[in-house]
Length: 217
Image 1 (cartoon, rainbow, N blue to C red):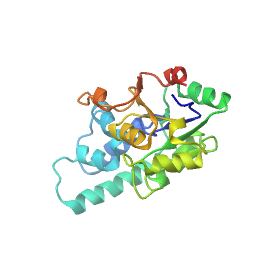
Image 2: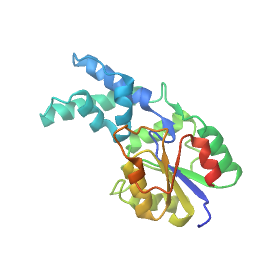
Image 3: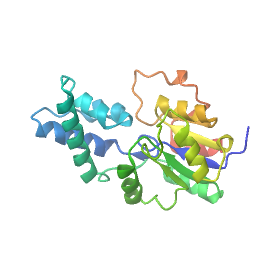
């Protein structure tokens, strides 16, 4: 096993618990449109799939593309204005990041979230200056599960894929890490639906709490 010197995280559902703010934005949109709000438990497993999936969850009966586009745009406006109200680091994540830094290792983020949301969120949560790289969904031509954003993260963090470990809570995260030649970890604490079979994702490890990753390093 190659020596790990860089730890890379997916953002939503892995590094930061953004579900409360993303769910709140959807429920505000539903109320604006005259619909009943959804329970947090119903929304949470869909958060990692982004705004399009959340709008589809909230308005499953809609088929008109222009209406869907309007709702998605409005959803993003609401979310941008309430980006980091209730979002926090997952339990154990502060300890993990401090361990990584204490060991003089590097860490960063690779997410499909667009940069105009990722960057201010990382700033507001207080991590932007500490990350060796922040790769968003629009940082490269291809998004996860394509390995291109993973390679860019390596370049910016001055590392190599075989020296990186990538943690995520979606199948595309694990696929992206595998495609790039990285070791991979499933964040079981993230936004994983009970219908998903994570043992089929092909990850090297899985953890129930963020600080369990310390033992893998």
